Length: 202
Image (cartoon, rainbow, N blue to C red; front, side, top):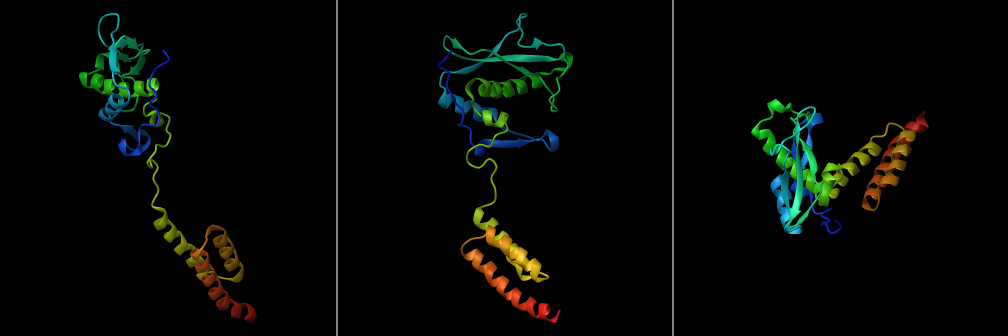
């Protein structure tokens, strides 16, 4: 099958939500949003569960069970992708303890995983890569810059001795530019005048 849609790069940061805390924290895109992207950019392709030999949707495993999910568009069908039925710690749930809720949750998660596996849709999340539109957003540069400049100029203006003053100013000169450099220079000259009498007395 060579004509599968390539949906890599469609998922954006504004679609991402967070779930869990600590080492169980995860970023995800709600299944309904994933399906909306699929319908828009791969019309006709729909997820489908592959039945087990006994006719049921659960495929038994040595521990627990899994769903087999493929996508179909008319006569075309993609290779099935397995999705294990797991608890919130990603451990397989024993077959006899699987509930209807476990199955429906797994189906939705599995469709998203299979869409990434088959079409590349939101693969960045599964690969832990940043998404477009600032998935790893930082504070706005002007605001962050202002805070940095203040701290740097403050360290220059309060240097304890000439050696420390020169070190702070050299570092500031390498990091800053334009008006910020002039602020550092002004603070340097002022502090230098304050420290030089101390040097002469010593």
